[in-house]
Length: 124
Image (cartoon, rainbow, N blue to C red):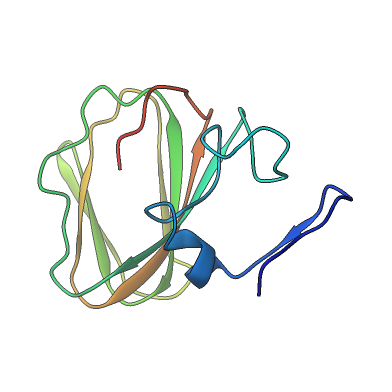
């Protein structure tokens, strides 16, 4: 299911659409004129196999982020703290300048929202 009409509406499937852009559904990197183009926010549908992890910490983050667990068990590493998301709907928010990393302890699906959408700054 993928429908982009001339009426400024886009209808899609996160699982299908995310595969085309490393999980990202919405942000500055979508083409101008596409309803999914935004300078204010980025949204990612992340599907991670067990053991999938960020090899290096994200440092010098310029955005605020919200990560919501849809399914699985997902661990977010933050300075001095490890957060385990284990129930659907569990979430964590971190602000600008907070370094982070993550690991899927089980097959996991997460929804990430970051703001603002910063052109030229695209850390996975």
